[in-house]
Length: 166
Image (cartoon, rainbow, N blue to C red; front, side):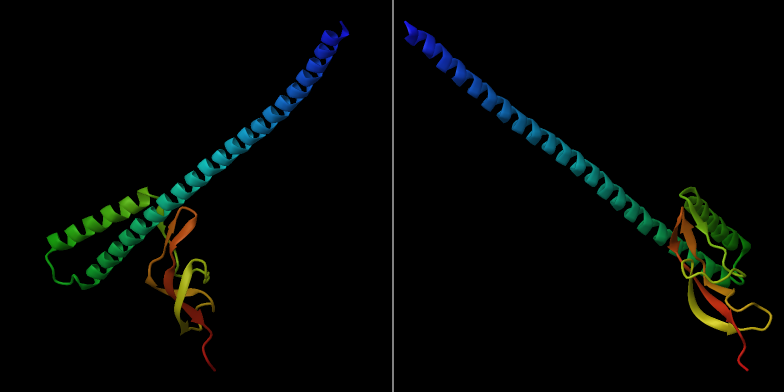
């Protein structure tokens, strides 16, 4: 009669081994689940960053194009000459509207003339020898620069004062 009792112990040992094996398998599956969850979260964050960067890049391109249109208005004013005042006023109105649109998007013109040359804000096109103006100061702005929030949308093209040659 001891045989059935031994079968119970053997079965009990097998059950214990099976439970241990199943617990280990469950632990591995849970770790794989957590890794997959973390991978998906990282993927989601990366996609959000890339989408934000693409939107930012697209906005930057459109804003730079509008700044170039604004430059054309500046050139138009230098050639408007004898045009009727209604034409001049219409061109000014359009220029103000574009400037207001840019400002509503956080675009601001850089102040350059009289400022110390800063390679992050200015692109030096040339120098002007001057005794009255401190060397390194911006003397002339050839093309206005713009800032978009904290970044430079387009640097100003300038001429910088230099010491006169002796």
